[in-house]
Length: 119
Image (cartoon, rainbow, N blue to C red; front, side):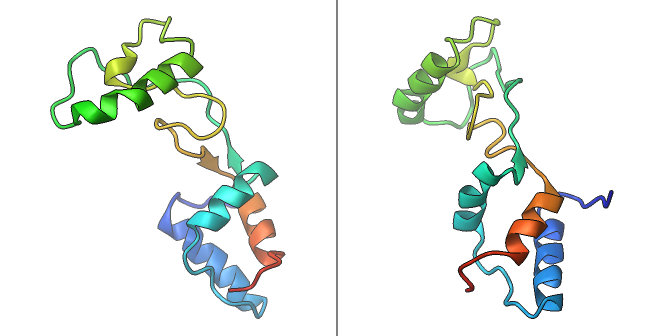
C-alpha cells in the first residue's frame, strides 16, 4: 500500500498520475472532491468532536446561532458532555470537525484517472 501525506502532496501525486496518463492536471479540485466523496474517495469520520468548555476567543456570536443549533440538533445535542455552543461533533457526511473525512488516495487516483469531464 502506498502511503501519501494528506493535502497538497496528494494533489501533486494525482496531477503526476494524470500527466503520466496524458491527461490535464486537476486544477481547482474542491468541486471535484465534493462530487467524489460519495464514490468512496474519503473515509467518513463520524466519531469525535472539537468541543471546548470555554467560550471561544475569536468566533463571532452570529456564527454560533443557527449553525451551532443545527449541528447540535443533528448530533443529538451533545449528550456526551460536549458543549456544542463552543464546538462541534463529527456526524455522517460533511461536518465542521472533519470536513469530508480522511482521504482514500487509491480511490481518489482511480476516480481522477477516469474522470469524465476533462478540465
